[in-house]
Image (cartoon, rainbow, N blue to C red; front, side, top):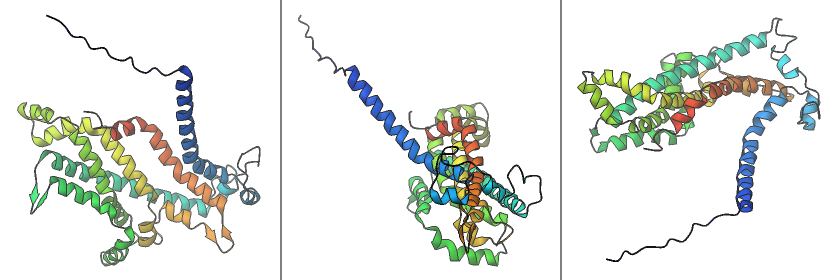
Length: 305
């Protein structure tokens, strides 16, 4: 009895020089892309510490091209020498900031609750409405993102006027919830699909109800995905400008509307706008850094089964 053996060609081994060159290229490309993404943030932060001359001359490096100044923050009443003084601009900023916090957190939380329940139903139960099935319903939710916001401007303006919800926080919360709900449903649908159904079946055998299995088994496992969806919804709501400018006038204005209003007959106050933008970016940056672990876990859920 003869045994046939198969000879395999040795795998190609790259030389150390080629390996080093590939690493240099990869990390160089990543550093270049990081620079492209972070430079606008750097420019915004440094501009908030510039004077008018430094802004017009395009100075970039603090302590080299220009000496930092609190001009932008002083115009908002947030500089060290003006923080203890009375400032109407600071009061307005804090009010707009509070409006952004309430509307963004409220809409994101409401979208997570509704979107998680809708996504769970689409992954665990079978629906049929006319010729629409689960996949069609999921695509219908996602297709709402294709609709341009300007198409809804006039209908929403008339509707909110009839309901007396113009210039109210609750009006923005409900509208922002509808705006981010398709994204939340899509993210949570993938999250729930990655959780084995056998875990819930075992919980049902042990005596739990469907709601008990959902809250005690599914929700703890899907928590990273919920946090990721919450952060994404929060960012979208926080940066929304169109509807905030359209449906508010005085009481419910948000930070993006205040940033866009930093213009006058003599031009744009870049230092004030940059200080406002920096103050608006800071909370999202802190949240992103604090919840980075959950964000990465949630966005990569379902990638490997």
